[in-house]
Image 1 (cartoon, helix red, strand yellow):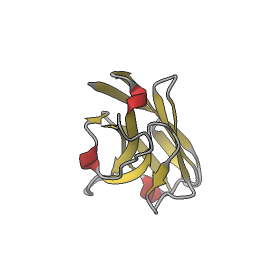
Image 2 (cartoon, helix red, strand yellow; image 1 turned 135 degrees about the horizontal axis):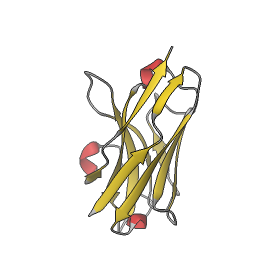
Image 3 (tube, helix red, strand yellow; image 1 turned 120 degrees about the horizontal axis):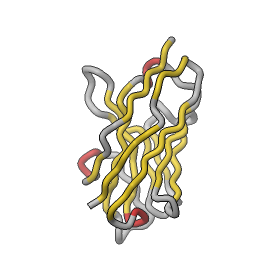
Image 4 (cartoon, helix red, strand yellow; image 1 turned 45 degrees about the vertical axis):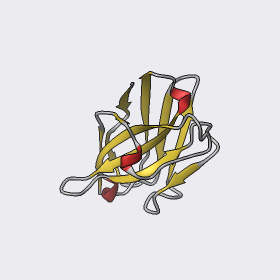
Length: 128
């Protein structure tokens, strides 16, 4: 089992930046593909970004492409989401998630059903 704890959320003005972190503990972090999702009030949870367990591949939702960057440090058991040029519509609770990827080092996943482990979320609020 993997435990995930997000941090780095907060209040920021439109155009600003935040970096979210997700620290993992438990099973071998490098065996998991990682993803970030978000859920705004009254909306369904949506995919934001994903990264393969070997860091080779990344994938982004169209709404954040060019503004957000996902990365990971397997030595630190941490995945990051660098968010630049933030917009009010980025306001949401952001969740990190882990998907087992033992046999597919290059795989990344955009469906929430592919992820077995989830963090508790961190609030990001972007003011206009």
